[in-house]
Amino acid sequence: MTEISLGMPQLPAPDYPAEVRERLAADAADVIARYPDSRSALLPLLHLTQAEEGYVSRTGIRFCAETLGLTTAEVTAVATFYTMYRRGPSGDYQVGVCTNTLCAVMGGDAIFEELKEHLGVGNNETTPDGKVTLEHIECNAACDYAPVVMVNWEFFDNQTPESAKAMVDDLLAGRPVQPTRGAPLCTYKETARILAGFPDERAGAVEATGGAGPASLIGLRIARGESPQHGKVVHPRGEAAAATEEGE
Image 1 (spheres, rainbow, N blue to C red):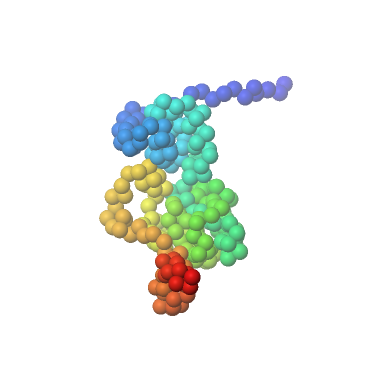
Image 2: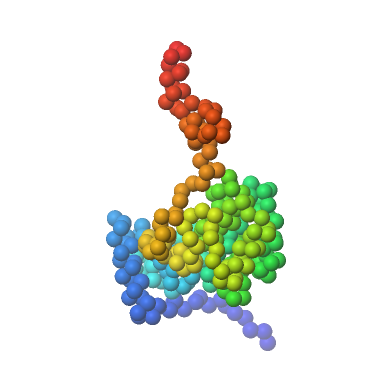
C-alpha cells in the first residue's frame, strides 16, 4: 500500500544555543539602536544571522522575528525577496559571474560555463570541500570592466576563463587572492558581518576600499577637461551655461 503524505507543516524552528543567542542579541541591540523604527533594522539583522551560519536559516528567521516583533512570514518575505540572502548552506567564497548583456557578450557566459565544468558544480552549487559556491549574477554594476566576476562582493575585473579558473584554484588551495580593486578578500561570513554594519577591523582594509575605478570616471574627467589623453572634449556645465548666455 502506498503511503500518502499530507504535507504536514514544519515544526517551529529551533532556537540558537543560549550563548549564541546572547551574543547575537547584544549585536542586534546595537543595530536596532541606529533606527527610529526597529523593523527598519531587519535587513542588517538578516546579514547578522547570515554571518553566524553562512545563510539565513529558519532559526535565523525566528531570531529576527522575535527580536523585532514581526511574524516569521514577514521576515521570510524579505529574506526570499533579496538574492543577497542565501537560503541554504554555502561556501566560504561566493563566486558570482555576471551574465547580463554586456558581460555576457564580452565573455561572461564562457567564463560561467568553464567554471561550472572546472569546479564540477552547477549554478548555486558548492564544491564538496565547502569552499566555493558558484552562481551567475544578472549585473555586478561594473559594465565598464566587463566581463566581471565578484567574490564575496569584491570586484575581479576584465576576467577571462583562464584568469577566473586560476582565481578559484587559489581559493580552493587557500592561497591569497587579491581583488582588482577594493578591500582585501574575506570569507562570506565575515563579509555578512560587515554588511550588517559592523566595522572591518582588519589592518588597512578600510583604506583599501576605493570608489569607482578609472574606467568608471573617465567620462566625468573628460567633461571636466581633466583628461590629458583626450583633452577638453566638452565644457563643464557652468562654462556651457555661461557660453549660452553670452551668445544670447
